[in-house]
Length: 194
Image (cartoon, rainbow, N blue to C red):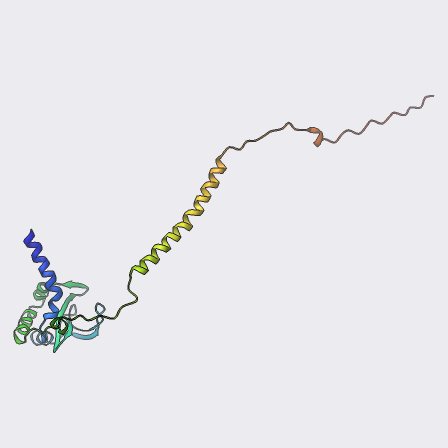
């Protein structure tokens, strides 16, 4: 099990650094061995923002190449929208293996100048990336939102509890004199005495 993990780890690191040690004439070798592609395009890569060249074979196989010193080096292959491993690509496009072998044998591997001189290249900072200030702002907004959502409901719960409390009612005996008009005083009877 440990041996398999080591192999996978090595393969992962090697796959990430393979374009740095790629042969320069890989694109030309692919065109020589596999023929002219059905379509070809040059665009800016959405991944690294650099120029990228794409060869399209059989309307579904997309081979991406990036510029290196002296030519173009193979980077990735896609079957429509699905990434392909090198073995899958060689199975679908057998001429690709011989093209890569020719490119590797014909020219020594071009080493990226920054790797050769052991210097670092500082890329321009991207101010639109997500970072700690953005995360802190999101947390602050969430806390504010929770405060404004929970406080009114706490107030409503308090009013509901007060409404459920029994109210002490005091009853008094009704005073009918207030509500009944008094009878008019009796008039004296005037009788004539004869």
